[in-house]
Length: 520
Image (cartoon, rainbow, N blue to C red):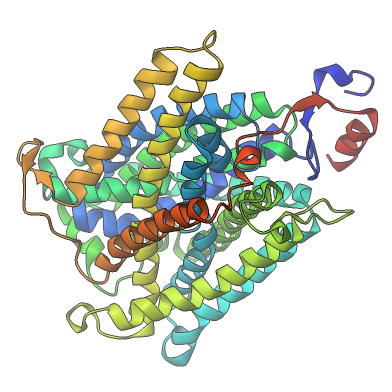
């Protein structure tokens, strides 16, 4: 690299340009997906909705997400920016639409930290058989400790975050894939078969597509490398590679693992995976297959919680930083540490929000849980707050991805007509959007029918407390529209011009090259 600066490009930015290479960028997307958590945490709820065909929800989600990933890769290649979808939608559609995306994104990446860390603490306490006050309060304390550690790692520098993601992400991939393969090699009642991939074995049409909402949520995070473009080496090349590569790798990984867990448990006894109060099926299988060595899976879950928290915090803080710099948020969010080049104020804001989310979502789930499904207990609340958050994220990303699809078509059609492709910039966005619309309509039971057909149904919300998630997203969206209208009505839109401008690329300097070599 030294002496050949033309071969390495970095972004013009206040952040640490060129700090992350392809392995770190790739793991930023993959660990934000959280392979270990996605493979194990969602199994009970996906099976409870789709029945024996639960693993089929993931190929459905993959087909939707891969088209979306190709579209986002085109946007990342055209407009490298820490703003991610905020900048892409602002540039392709309009800054007001970009502001609305960022408003919805608050429900997504920034809120995940509180929900996932608390649920991780619950998994630890329940797997170790803790009871009483320890079981009641350990998950919340664990969550608050982890979000604080994550804030510290972010403050110390983006390179530390990148290296941590490589180690933790690689560890969880190996351990969870090993568990899935073990289940395929040692199937339970029913033996090894393909019945989980037969749509006729789904409990219902609506159930399969509600499961697909969770499966899409399991994939969410693959876009996590896009906001790291301003800190990436060769951003217009490496970020698109990370976006598409992470979706393909995770798609293969999750189907194998889910099939393995279902097979290892037993396709003839799959209903046992959804009984109230039981531990995660993956934990049960690890104890069955590995004996006392099952604790390595617990260590992996802690590692995965830390990894996904870092990745989500990276996305949230970079989005807020870019909005602060552009003026869409207060300039306070755009402050960068003079030496570490980290967005310190955005990191502080992210930490506060994560703490509030950990406490707030638990409280909401506690008081909203009906007595018939477990009553008001902290243990039940820790489970439900995580799945409520999953519902919210699933529906939010459907809106964000759709706006991104529209932005890609409009940006290339208007600004880059010589590069416009009817396949990449028109067909793929349409297929992705239609898939998301179908999932939304089926999951809310607006349409249904057997076999899968668009027949009008009586619209029903999911059961309590998950209905609060749908209501909250709807209200949050309306509030976002009102904010956009308020900014327009009061003439507070000076930020709009900057919102649509991405970072430009330039050759890395000799000093930056030496710094990059020293870091790695």
